[in-house]
Length: 397
Image (cartoon, rainbow, N blue to C red):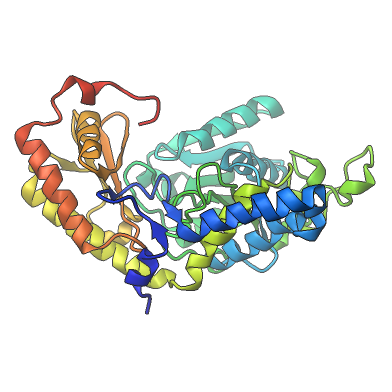
């Protein structure tokens, strides 16, 4: 059984702040500062370039990928980290399309994160082979899977509402029609149990700065089913995905296994933070995290609907049908969220009217939930949000 009081003590949480935005950026694990400082001073500072060998920097993408792979139920040796989630989406989609050359449809939904759709649009233009991106309402995905689909590309948990796709069922249906699947786990990894092996997923990608708490700019991950990995030629043939990077061949030869999905130079300092953040999972069980998450989000919905009748629930009411976030809609949602932040309750806003609240049991409990709702109710009742300073849009919402 996970001791959530113990896991909370592993994080730096600013005094007077209730942090309900771990679905966007996780807080600082206390050990990460020490780990990064060591990487800066003892490794970069003292070892200089020899750190690539002495400190094992070059091997870290695979080692860290393996640790993430265990969290998402990936087969051993099938996950690697590096680059950004956007890059990993591009890699997975290009690989998927190359494995289905006779098909031209990329199927996704209107709740997918926009960058995934942007990458699809850009790749379609670059290939210029007649591919099309078809987006449908989330509830209509299953009805649109047929023999024309090359790749089904979905984010498992909707970034706006928290709605949860059934990975196992949709993967089976897509593969039954001869299509491949790409699952974006940005709002799943570290928030709920994922078992890529049981789902028989073809590709999965995700970031590490949300529920995995590795910090802003932390590297992304990609996981490829072992049955595919030796049959894909990476569209982004970076030098670290080469079979022998330091042979400096003029022609590209893909590396063995998942190593071929590496692209650029590993972000050494960010990997140090990621390693420290993953240590937290040595003390936590994802099944316990999921159970507590449902308890907390259910409580939040009940309390908000009782105290804040002007808000409309935008997330599924069933806790098992959503990820670890709750979204409420209000025409002045942006201003309300800014007022909340001014009072120490940090969530975020997604256009046009969605206020998002993330619940990470590793450091959030019932006390914080009740306190946050009390402050929200006070802000709404007093119309504290109806001030000019809360209506001015910042660059990041």
